[in-house]
Length: 139
Image (cartoon, rainbow, N blue to C red):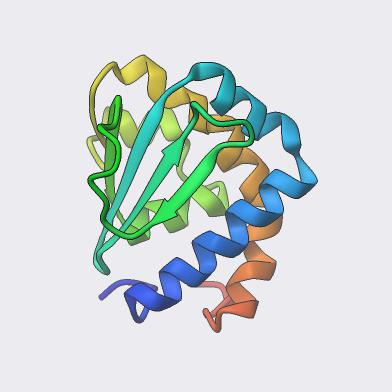
């Protein structure tokens, strides 16, 4: 069972995360915009999709399934993998190497999100509390 109890809880957490990252560390959003990539982030267990449009400055985020844009890069992982990345216990490169993070498209371009994940690590514990996730030792 996933650490997240529902898609709604995960969407709420992701929205808070991206809003705070872009307000507290605008340079991470600028790197995505400079890449001009459209990235689909698909999370499983629970099911969530986020489309990051790096052709806009700041990047435009669409939550939920959409066919409005054809992504340049598709990234897929389960919610627990995302959780481990945001806690800082699973590096992005290791997640790619052991296939916990699957990428369709030029894999090297996935590292454009590394700054976003790193910026998110500082604020993720607070977001966990706000959305009702256990922040204890096993979290």
